[in-house]
Length: 101
Image (cartoon, rainbow, N blue to C red; front, side, top):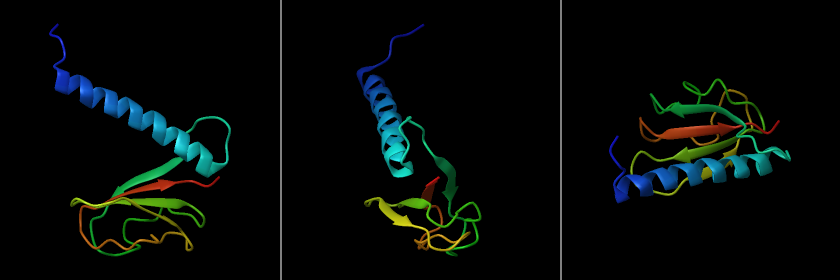
């Protein structure tokens, strides 16, 4: 077995930290003491419709929008079931749905 390169170690450290931090943030959002992700779905937009790919969304869920191009993540709370509070502008954008309960 070969050893990991420094770059591979850095990527692995980042991935582990991101999962741990993500679980902690979701636990706070979900109001739970145990560390659980609360992830209801991970969606890659296939159209620019706010409803086409978003059937998993419930009222009160928090949707995290991560743009396909470089940019900041956006958080928004869903106000209508099956509808993203952040309409896709670009096919390929990533959405993570965090359950509130």
